[in-house]
Structures are given as structure tokens and as C-alpha cells.
Image (cartoon, rainbow, N blue to C red; front, side, top):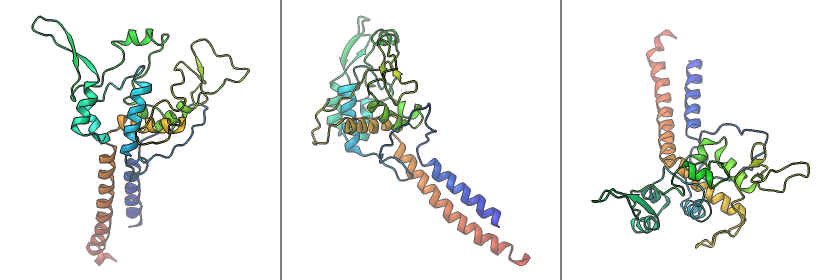
Length: 256
């Protein structure tokens, strides 16, 4: 019976672990700054105000160099935008469509069903615009990196002057949160890069936290649903554990 209880408790603990974001240990010899994220833990959730601010930071600061190729305009409903707002946001972009009746491709305003356009037409143009470095797509970046949210937050705040004994080649930048410390991406955030309608702080820390929230949602938009299912499963297993214990005692009572 003791082994049965231990195995059951272990299974429940595993379910709780699965309800938390899957993040491996940090890589490299860098020390990451730990942010305070609403989406961590089994009861984590996305702060929609932070998501909308983060989307604004992405559009105003990041979108000129890096795309989010797996996010359609209609997905922005998860951020709290209504249908009219989503249509207005979509209309700010242009996408290629066609062919028309004459067999020609043409540009048109984006619709809610369209993917948010990438700033580059192809990979070669992306590399040519970034000194040969291919800028990563940001859709899944928060899950593609170890300790994703803390890594992104630290990276955005990690641009500092290089030590006097460190040689920084042309086209590279020193970042104390990047493995090897030399990164091709220029510093994107300095503070006051955008103006929030809700008056939230636009310090480097505030902007970096907001865009990190947005990129975590972009990487796992169903996180809240997954966690609700996980919590419900743990609750069900807890009840099943108690029922199984008493059922076992009743079935095997004559042997004790």
C-alpha cells in the first residue's frame, strides 16, 4: 500500500510539473536576470494589458528586423482586441495576393486571417540587411531558448560596454547575457522607445518585460488552456487516489 501511495503522489507531482512552462537550465556561462512573470506556475496566466503593450513594442521596435511568421492578425483576439480593432491592425499591413485575372500578383491590405507579414521577402534579403546574419523568427523564440523569458529579458537589458580587454569586431555588439558575449543584433531598447496609452513606465526594464510577455504568448498562445486542463487533471487524480485507496482497503479487507 505504501508503494502504491508513493507512486500515485509521484504521478500527481509529475502532472503539476507538466502544468508549468517547460524550460531547461540556462545555457552558457552567463547569469540571467529573473523576471516576475504572471504566466509561471500551475495557475499562471497572461496579463492582457502587458501583452498589448508588448505587441506595441514589437511593432514599433522589433518588427522592422524580425518577423513573427506563425501569428495571424486574428490571433490577436487573445490579447484582448475586439473584431474592429483587429481589422484596423490588419489593414495597416500589406500582403501579396493573386494572381489576378491577368495572372499578375498584387498587393492588398491584410485581413484578420492573414499572417502578420515578415519584414523581408526572403532569407537572402534578411541576411543582406543584417551584415550576413540571419535574424531569427520571433514566433517561437521564447520556447526555443533555455529559460526563454528570463533569457529574452536579460538579453534585451544585457547591452553594456565591453571590458577593456575584449575586442569587439565591426558589426558585433557586447552583451553580457549572450553566450560568448558577442552578438550581431544591435541594442533594440533604450527606454522611452514607445509611448503607452495607459501611462505604463517606458523604462528599458518595463519595455523589455512587456515584449517578453508578448513573445511568450506568441510561443505558447494556449498556455492558459493547458494549465487549466492540467489543474483539472490533478484534481481528478487526487479524488481518484482517495477512492482507489478506500476501494483497495475494502477489497482486501479479509486478508488483513
